Amino acid sequence: MGSSPYAHTLPTPSTPAGRDGLAAILDRPSGAVVALDFDGTLAEIVPDPEQARAHPGAVPALAALAPKIASVAVITGRPAAVAVRYGGFAGAGGLDHLVVLGHYGAERWDAVSGDVSAPALHPGVAAARAELAGFLDGRGAARGTWIEEKGGRAVAVHTRRAEDPQGAFDALREPLAALASRHGLILEPGRMVLELRPPGVDKGVALAEYVREVGATAVLYAGDDLGDLPAYGAVDKLRSDGVPGLLVCSGTEVPELAGRADVVVAGPGAVVGLLAALAERV
Image 1 (cartoon, helix red, strand yellow):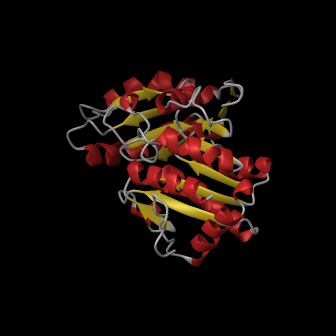
Image 2: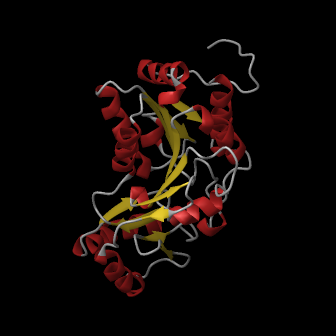
């Protein structure tokens, strides 16, 4: 892209498909959807997920970009209302074109109405949660391992605070997969977190359905973790169907994601810079 007169510089995608995706967004921004994970992408990963907040530049960058494109969608495993609160999205000027798809798309918050819509809860989540504390104790789960409630739509076990986070993660992965299966759930691994949630709900499904709803002619997806792989797969499928796409990876901590990305940036601050650069260019 050469030298730029803009305050922020857009990175050059490393793949032809990525370059086509970026060109399509720049050529016809009114048809573009920009979709983003929250934790690790718009917000730094922190030891206590309740302390996570969007990067200070995120809302200004999104407010500059959103009015110029079809939509911005934040797709997260968090409850939609929590992501809205931690993101500072509610009431922010310029974000009328923002939606938050929480619980991997099972919940939806629209900036225009401020309302959250959601289907009925899967009974397996409550059943698994009722077992979980005793289940972990019975397996001698490492000190520092803890359970995160996700509004009845999922439940997660974090190992980041354990003395050996990776060891605790590895020891629990298979037993928790079996527990999830017994209750009709799936296990979604992430960065030192194992989440039990209903099947058929993931970021790929959420992204594909939203792109179809909007009638997008191009899509950008940015994520940082294993849970973002289905969204990457959805972009690959959209590309094969003639909808150009750009895959962005925030950070290099998850090689499976970084290796598939068209653009790799150095964490949420750099994601915000990319969004700001897009806003300046479109």
